[in-house]
Amino acid sequence: MSEMKRIAVVGASLAGLRAAEFIRRAKFEGELVLIGGEVHPPYDRPPLSKEVLRGEREPERIALRRRSYDELNLQLLLGQRAVSLDTVKREIRLDGGTVVSFDGLVIATGGEVRELPHQPRLNGIYTLRTLDDALAIRAAFARKPRVAVIGAGFIGAEVAASARQLGLDVTMIEALQAPLAQSLGPRLGRILQEAHERRGVRVLCGRRVEGFGGTDRIESVLLDDGTRVGCDVVVVGIGVSPAVSWLADSGIELDDGVRCDETLASNVPGIVAAGDVASWYNPLFEERMRVEHWTTAVEQARHAVGSLLAPPGEAKPFESVPMFWSDQFDIKIQGVGRPKPTDDLVLAGGTPESEQFVALYGRAGRLVGALAFNEPPKLVQLRALIGKRGGIDEALKIAES
Ligand SMILES: Cc1cc2nc3c(=O)[nH]c(=O)nc-3n(C[C@H](O)[C@H](O)[C@H](O)COP(=O)(O)OP(=O)(O)OC[C@H]3O[C@@H](n4cnc5c(N)ncnc54)[C@H](O)[C@@H]3O)c2cc1C
Image (cartoon, rainbow, N blue to C red; front, side, top):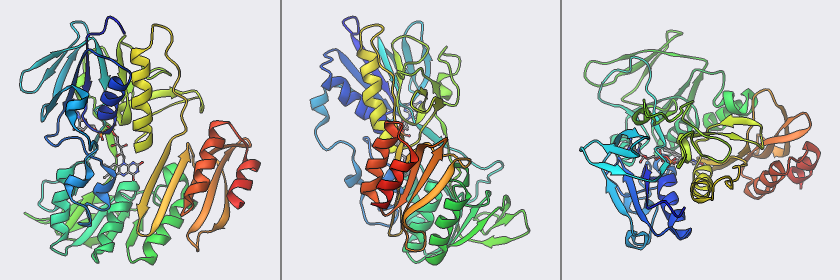
């Protein structure tokens, strides 16, 4: 730490801003540079698919930092993208030609939305990752369009719910047999599907998009079973890829994101990663993972800074139970752990019909994941139990309490 005179953080969003704050909280007194590709000061993404889309919250109310940036004593370079990294000279090149040198580096460039193969450039087709995306979709929704959402993951399902709450005609299209079937299993997926259908969303699962109709504006989506979904707006929500193109040929090892060790350190000394871009070996689940959730981004920012500033050999493993929430209509969904479709699944503490229950995922008797509809306090206890490598029996007692 004593040799580190300048730390750069690339990515000025949740993980990057929190990393900068933790760096100062750790009493690092050298120079600090925070570089972000977007022109907006760091803002929170979860409201984008919810309150912002529905026009219930304005952009100035989603700032991630309410206090003055002056207190952090940093150089804030917004609207400037890192285009390459030289790990030998320890320099970052920005798109305007500026070169930023560093001793320590936090990579926090997050994710970039994926597009469908052959996605046409028609008016009315959107993806959602940034504030600008959300405002564009919000403006389109104000014209009362028929909406087709492609992809029933969390973002797609939230967009469908928000559009329906605005009274729009909504069709959600999913290639899998049920929404979120790959991560939560088909049973939970169908429960989510039914909750959407009860509220008027048309959900088409097990169908792939074959093409799009329209010459200048989108008019329809064509599915592989011949169905043609008429629409005026399409939101494509088929996931994100880690934003690592600027690291090509840098010597930083990549593997579905920045490949980190247990401590969130990359293969190059003095370079760590945090947030949606970081792939790391989580000893708690004995597997390598990359998590795209808010809570993990904050926890990783704290941990990665600790690893960066720790004396050699003293960095600790990041053992973490992933946690997320998703608000869809009046349903508060929360999930913890690392569930897989092959896990043993038990529903407890309520019923899917009442839209209040807990789903427990077990593997060889151990609790590895839990998901709840409208049961926040129990999830906090279950998260702690997963962290202690607790069993399903104990989890059932919490779920039924
Ligand atoms: C619409 C939406 C709703 C969400 N809702 C929830 C939710 O309800 N619950 C939940 O748990 N999680 C939710 N998430 C996920 C959560 O917001 C992310 O996990 C979190 O934003 C990750 O933070 P990050 O800083 O790692 O990455 P990001 O937020 O992606 O930020 C990365 C930043 O780096 C910048 N960047 C990328 N490349 C470069 C470059 N080369 N040079 C400079 N800057 C660069 C990007 O422009 C971006 O600003 C949601 C995400 C979205 C998009």
